[in-house]
Length: 517
Image (cartoon, rainbow, N blue to C red; front, side, top):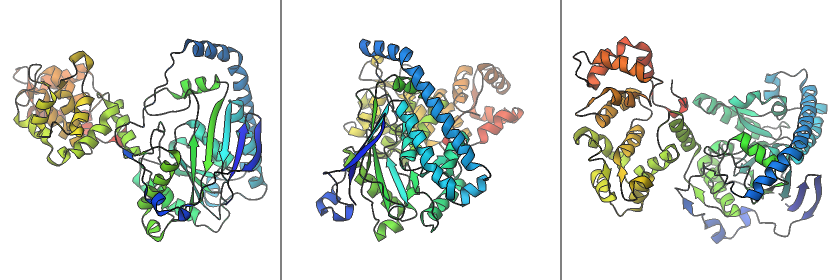
């Protein structure tokens, strides 16, 4: 396979030349090269991106380009979008969604893909995106699946058009993107539905091994956007067919990163604005040699995915990470229910496992058997914290866990252990009925398991959508003797009088739900 370098600028694609740095395929690499693994990191959060904007010259330039450049770019982008949409409408006329899903496009409809792709690439060019391409895209017969990583921006979608409208894996939620995405004949998946995932895997296997002239499948195996500091775990969907795949690398070598769109950071509108007010935004796409799986990898998609990730990380010069899409989903869930420290919840979960706390659930015993937590006894040093949890104070994992809850205004040597317990108890009761979390929060917030009116509201506010007034009504019903505090048993006995709340609390505390009911 001859490797080439292609430059794509705002004016289009320039000529290709052989690349002197062409790499040997994995099968030709030395044993030492193949055994060299990227350094694994755990606690550099790949889902956080900060767009620092403190250069006054850059601010003046952005204002100037917002007025004099961005309007023209927006007009040209909209013109390209309208032309592409019109072409897609014509090309899809008379085809049902079922026909698109079960038969590859052929004849004049297939030939129109080139025109559509050129129109879409022009749209990105008018946005100021300059694209450099290294290597050669393999034919479908060589690699039925393209695996693209790292995935960090909505601009990554340009790869679909640069590869001649390959078929991407698309969320069901994005099915309303319109006819342009339909023309690529995508494979749809519903992330929250396990049955849908199995159907999707089956469709990937069928298409990848089909004798029909389907386009190549294009998959971002990370499943979500990251900040490119590491490669998170690959989802195995692309590797189930056991066919050769072509790894594709994406880089954005810009002085100011206006394209990275992660779980925590600038929103899409701000990133689009900042990108459209740059003179140029550079993107480098590199097609690596086709990866041929071993017999062992064909039988084990997860092993196949790990080995390809290791290869891509080495080529990118970045470490791998044990973060996953599920970690991002967990962080989103914690953020949506307004719990504290959402950006650290995945780290807390991993550190608890490293320290063995997840096996003993020491925190549950601590709130059940220990004294009431108050302002007088809840602020702990790392030595006191480690003693309470029976973990080594000098362990690096203990230090990392402790540092998450350190706040400068309290000093650098103490944390409020109640904050840690709130989140660790949440993790312990995750994927079980919400009432389990209510029970342990009564012990955390209360005195001998009895909570006051305010503490009762603090117990429920992360589990159901409830106002302080609604919580007060339930509290007074349970506090029949007007003592100013209630136990978990008193609350559970009156809960059938509030069927809507009862129904919600009987549901599992599940990140797949994303929001409070």
